[in-house]
Image (cartoon, rainbow, N blue to C red; front, side):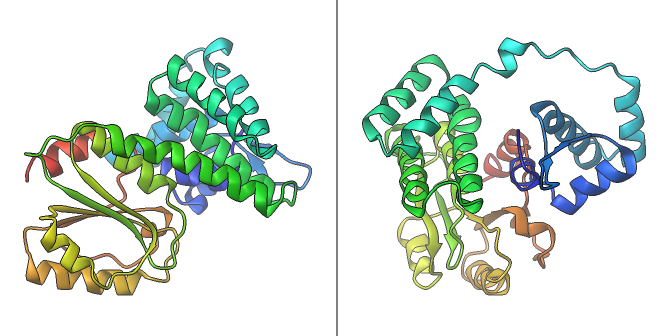
Length: 291
């Protein structure tokens, strides 16, 4: 089950939009916790993803998309398919909460041996990370348990950044979260997507100061800069920095992701793309191949 915050981050849809679709069009009916908080099933997430694709990609009106959804009988979900990751997620979570690195690594190794690494990232590691965050916010686990768990998962993800092969003829990418932004998991998964394509990704991670990055871009011959923000505070500073970079190097491309981009001011530039959602493949072939 997912909280509305998790669904918003997974689908890159503002929470207010999810609530509006739910209240006005009844596209999903989440369950509620004892405290009244929404909990969304995997079927709910899939439905919201489908609605988003119709509205944002195919430019269909939300009312028409809902009508299409109601006229189409849902495909049956096989219990074995929907639950196949649950045991591994639960075991990994328990190992992490027990601060048992050896057991956690054994479980993660088993997951990677059973499934493609992207499946493991999206369906196991990211979900466990969200659960850890939720349990810490509720006071069910300690700061030490949250830090240990988060660092373990991030380390397992970054290992693939080092080992995946690079095609030197493809555009080189710089990826970071600006200073004050600590939520890096979305940026990390996107960087792994690019690395799997063969692009070299220089991953700077969270809380990265903008000072000096122009020198890095020049020194490493960067073609694309990927930035992730959930915190709107640095938006103006980041926009000014992007404009300065484009004045010095008009051939640079920028991709800005994260939940804050929906409500933040945006640069009117063909060199800047915002909020990919799930359209990574389409973006890659039109944006990266165009370099």
